[in-house]
Amino acid sequence: MEPESPAVASLPPLASTLAAAATMMTELDSPKKKQSSYSKENKIKRYDAILREFMTHFHGRSEAEGGVYPANHEFSNEELSAIQPQDIGELFLF
Image (cartoon, rainbow, N blue to C red):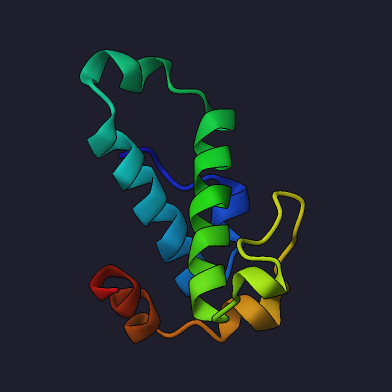
């Protein structure tokens, strides 16, 4: 696994855990040949998409409230700091 980027390292601990999970999921989904050509930009896009999906579930947003957060949405440190380990676990049980 690659070392954390400075951007990921500066995130709150649980957010960086999500980033690491997104990277691991990407590595598991990609054949070996693709892993070496998978760009940092694409990894960040994948992380952002996973984070938006998770935060939509975490905040209980419905379609009426706009559904999944838009790609340009930036979550505050307060929003990210509110995530507890059990919240991530609940997502996998959902």
